[in-house]
Image (cartoon, rainbow, N blue to C red):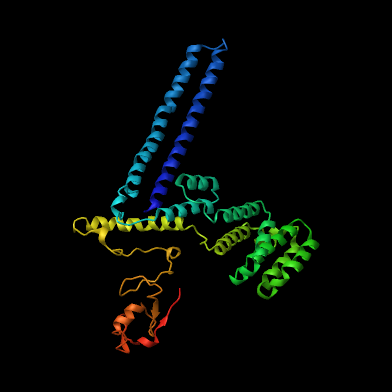
Length: 381
């Protein structure tokens, strides 16, 4: 679905509307000034009323305000006429033909995913209302997300204490995840103290909280300490980057990511990722539906996507392996196995290709390598 063309057309309509409004305002202001000027002259008995009115009429005919307004409105109307056509072209309303009506949904799981989406976005009242109306039990993650948003709201107000307390309580887990969140938070707190023009307190804070990161973040700590020399003119210093809100944004993103990670949740909403990926894949499927319309192919009975759908890297996940030969998903009983050539097949496929172990070697289906079935190694995603 190409949204750029829709945005461009909308911007064109908005610009035409702005120009039309400006032109109309100018003309109305001009006419208003001339009318008030004529009224002032008419109130003075020394002038002939008729000549004044004739002068006003002549001015109006010369300026031709009606023609100017018509021209501006015409351009706006042309843009407004084109916009619905662009919407109709780009926003295909017949998306139902790409829908699989034989797919079974677990209503409980879907409701939990939707409720979880509201909670992770901070929309707790809406989430509670949804849970109540669907009759679902409260999501176990609700209270955790409440705590997370309290921390994030405090950070928006440049209050780092809740974030620092949470990071300290989960310090070991953050180290295991190799996260630099604690360093980011202590750096921001150091800068907050130093910008309060209290260099001595900032140095004391650095000794207490930043010195422990010297082995891995020495360069960054040195920059922070040196920035104290420019405390009265930091924006003109080589360390002006410390004034950028980007540092706060990065800390917020890292805290959100690590908080969700410790909850066993992805940093991005699964519902948001699914819907976004679906909107990008939909145009390809709709085009395919148009192609097969006359070929009597049943989309509902196909076991895999009939066309390749290219998605950006952020939508590519590999927690589930599908064997390229059998087209079956891997499982505990049928795990993915890497062959000596580097290609990967499911265990059952390798067993079949080696004739249940009767053959010690077989040809890889993707390269001419002779594969020893006994040397295949199980992969863990």
